[in-house]
Length: 395
Image 1: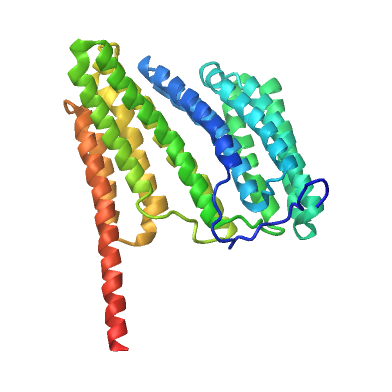
Image 2 (image 1 turned 90 degrees about the vertical axis):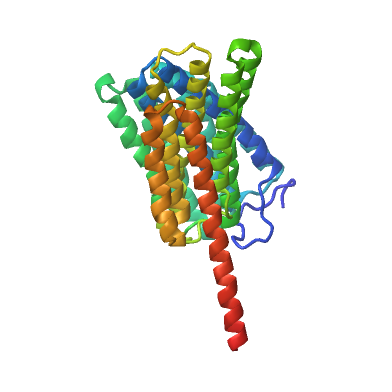
């Protein structure tokens, strides 16, 4: 240990009681702001009927948020030393993340990613120094760490070029290409020697980000109550919207946290699939909150959208979330009832969009989905316990 510094070597992936640190929780607060701005911008697009433009901008802006969080989270799981230099470097990364948060709305509404890219440069200078420090401290992981440092530097140079020089007519296509290259850096680096991320810690971090995106829907529920309090003639409608929104939020939370989530397969392919697929879960949950804000506008008589169109801004993101939660989190249970029931509920959620009071019907469907997931888990647990007891008696 030099000057209070610890050697930045790989942490034990089986370390007991590994949990998020206060520094990680502080880092997450920046993303509360970022997600709020992305969701708010999507709401404004939808409220004005600009659905395609809004979705493209949202997908790009949310990717910038999510990928910044991902880069920090997985490194911290493998190499967090929590010494003074690590903390200071993380604070620099936080400054970059806050810059990204400040630029997300401009990126989505004006396709100007200059501020976002500037935030990424700041984050990645700090992140690169972390990887180089790990390369010096941990000879066994040196090649992997150097590959990460080189990879993120090369991709960041591509992002800067894209922001400054990319021709307008190919900007979106180039965005996808560079984003894929960015997501390929772990694939390139980890093939030498995989980093020792902690599966329980990673699962907790993902759960915390899920709570961040759910927080936007809680805010939308509060806005509905506030709207009802300020405009008494709409109070009944607004309270009904708030109750329905809270029910849907509770169901989304219930389904995700019904059992402890963990990437059980530590292989590179499985961990990347599990980690990357959560982009769509996070984005769909955050989009639900934008739909709730559209419902608030509708309830206050401030929306020009039809009732069906307004309903679709909630039912479609919820259906996407439900299908993704089933595929990513629940399919491994191999439960025939869930495998039929959850896709059916997702289809029903979209189908009710044209019905009067679709939000209330959706709240009922969401509650049914949550109850179904819990019922099947309890049934599986009881069946497993009964089987274990019978086996013990036979022995």
